Image (cartoon, rainbow, N blue to C red; front, top):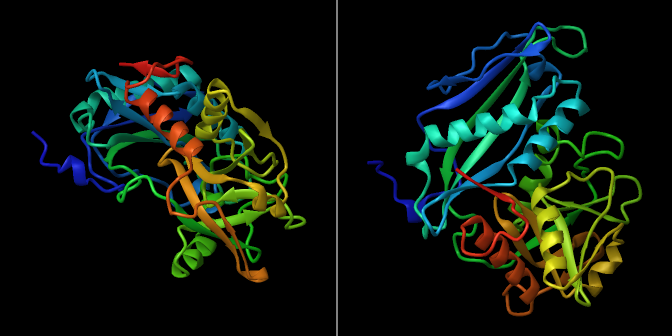
Amino acid sequence: MIDIDWKNLAFGYVKTDYNVRCYYRNGQWGELEVSSSEEIPMHMAATCLHYGQEAFEGLKAFRGKDNKIRLFRIDENAKRLQASCAGIMMAEFPIEKFKEAVRKVVKLNERFIPPYGTGASLYIRPLVIGTGAQVGVKPASEYLFVVFVTPVGPYFKGGFKTTPFVITRKYDRAAPLGTGTFKIGGNYAASLRAGQEAAKGGYSNVFYLDAIEKKYIDECGAANFFGVKNNTYITPKSNSILPSITNKSLLQLAEHLGMKVERRPIALEELETFEEAGACGTAAVISPIGYIDDLDNNKRYTFSKDGEPGPWSTKLFKLLQGIQYGEEKDVFNWCEIL
């Protein structure tokens, strides 16, 4: 038995039994290997350390209402990891091998999958790093794929509640035509300072505008933004935003529920017209936004008068979580049952 208080589990790292690895050498990926070590032996001149050749993913396994294990949209994570690897000149990890590795690591650590009803899940973190030694600025010739897991508690410890965001003009998360559409560590490093300043101001996260004109909505911290008005789910279209698998799913569910959907540039002043707003991603599914402060202009955009999430955000959140936990019909066949 595992001595874990499942209902009070934090969203953090817990040591599990095994991880799965695969090496790229001599122009090809090898076989999957199982390891119980939390360490990665690495050359001090590895390109991941010097030139940022690193990409990762985040997905979850859920213990369902029927006690079965569900993996959510694993194929989408495999494809996005390939796109990230291609974007920074790393060897692309094969989609079928990715799926095999994820299935294997989940089954090997099955005792760490939280019980149904606790609100917890098994977080899965695949990554690819450049391990080949290189001093010149160019891609490595060797890479390592690793996937590890850790049980995590629900993102919302106080329940499904709204939180405040703050607009920044001092910092950009990513440049247009840069690496913003790839899930790589450099984008997250670029967001740390802005995120810390927002937290010191009492905000849950920072709200980015486009890097060129500072007129259009970009991302919310490390999440995609969406707004709701006139029965329409609206999310930004930008060449510097990470394509969120959660957002992609919510767009489909919104249509399924009878909403209109739009993916287009959203001007900052349009925030005044939204009835609801939220940030979406793997960790929380939906983080409802109570208000967004624009301190430079002494302005506040409010989306909740009573601190409660809006009806559409609540409906979408419950439906997506219901699919992941086997409570709702998986209308799009997103879940793979192990």
